[in-house]
Image (cartoon, rainbow, N blue to C red; front, side, top):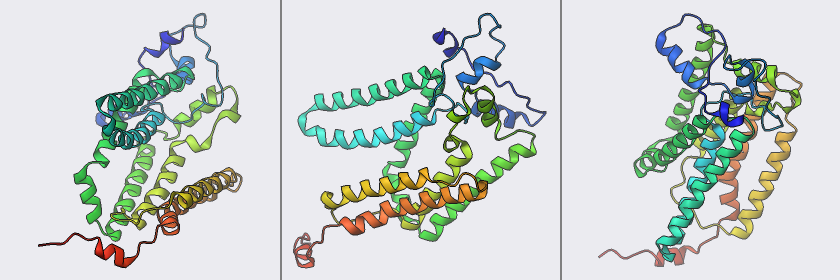
Amino acid sequence: MISKYLIISTQTNFYIPDIPSCWCFTFRILAEDRPFWWVRETKEFTTLNRPKLYQNELTCEPSPGNPSGHLMTSTTYLYVIFSVLEEAGMQYGRTAVIVLRACYYLSLLLISVSRMYFGCHFLHQCIIGILLGIGMTKLTMSLSFEKYLTKLTRKRRLGYCSLICLILFVVYWGQKLFGVDPQWSVKMAFKWCDDPFYLDPSTTLVFSIIRLTGSLVAFAVVGPVLRSAPLDWRRSVPLTLIMMTIKWIAISYTPRYYGVIIYYLYTFLIHLLFTYGYMRLVPATASVLVDSRVQRNSRPKIN
């Protein structure tokens, strides 16, 4: 029964007023249902043959289904990790590279199966998430993009962050202007999730925007690292683990009962401060001091 509804294209079952066709088309592509509420809303089934999906904490995601955010982030992280492993494994021949690439795609396959198994995504949403993740990772890791970032001043980087925030603000309130509820997916999740305690506010679109904006501002302040002293892993690894633990504790104590402004401001500051700490505090604390005389003598001579 699960395979039956996984291959059926999704439908948006809420009312979209008479708005410009291009906006409506874009909205219908991006605002797709998740399986756990689609099976309750769709008219493809009747009362007699409508499937009943088992739900747990992983099922009730309150954000739109397309594309799969889990697959996009997993694709990006694993792409960077396996790229480093592949570069190190080239010394062992082509077989090692093939094995690493097979492990990479196998990992993405298993993540996709798990997302569909828990009723979080349809197959095409997982595929789109993988393709977007690979595309954006290749773009950001390209040499031309890296050179462009290194030439940006701090003021211009902060300006780009402000522009991104402005675009998000316009998109959010633009939907309201056209009569589209930006929080429609949250309402659908509340409507069809068996247990409201399964719903996690940190998986909503607004929370993701606030979290990523905080990290982006920290990156804009620090800037891309062109050259850095080598790190002592005996200090960098424990320090990073300690910071991750403190961040996890800080997030678990996020104030949830003092209004949305306090909630999102706290979220913004947490991700800004810890991203800044990872990029500034860890290198400054765990850098290996190099004798300037040794460094000067090690420079190549120019004839």
